[in-house]
Length: 223
Image 1 (spheres, one colour):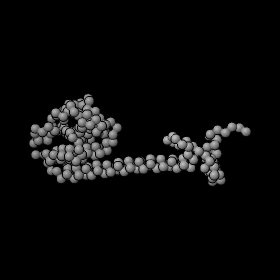
Image 2 (cartoon, rainbow, N blue to C red):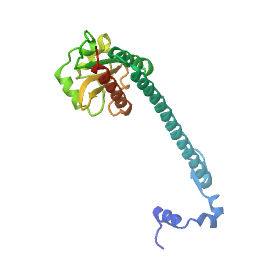
Image 3 (cartoon, rainbow, N blue to C red):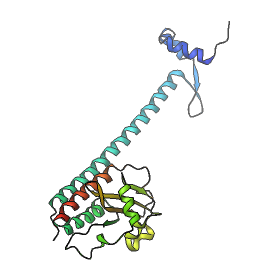
Image 4 (spheres, one colour):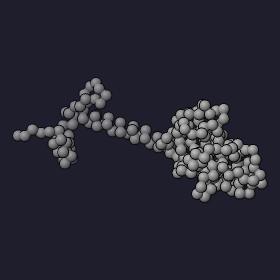
């Protein structure tokens, strides 16, 4: 009689699902090591432990998904509030105020800076129209999605003023009017993991689109 290998036993049991029904008493005679050490346990008890572990893992995954869903709902509500406020804004100064207020107070982004390259007539002396390098303007044009990560290598970090040395992560969002970039929105944080490479940027993209549309509307008829 040829020797049986573990694979042969496993294949036999898979192809004969009624084996343990026919030999039900055998389950009580087979003992396996406890998965966490210690005493030996029966096959039935081992199966029960395995099912409990799977249930715990499933419950943990479900709780994680629920938490993600609640977080997304909260962010979507904040985006909605900003959108409603921007729709009602009638002047450039009002839009700038709303951007800063909502991002800092509602979204809890500690540092917000905005730079625009096309200054409308009648709007003077605002930091949003301070000169920026041509390299940053070109960079904004190439951004197909928001940049998230370190502040190293970007002149935008200096936009945060006295807080610049403490900024450990940032998000840079290109603002557009039609196809071309009209500006750059910078969000900064002292937390190095607030804005990190590889994070989801869907809501940052939506923020960029809302703010771009609002700015394009009010700068058209700026006094």
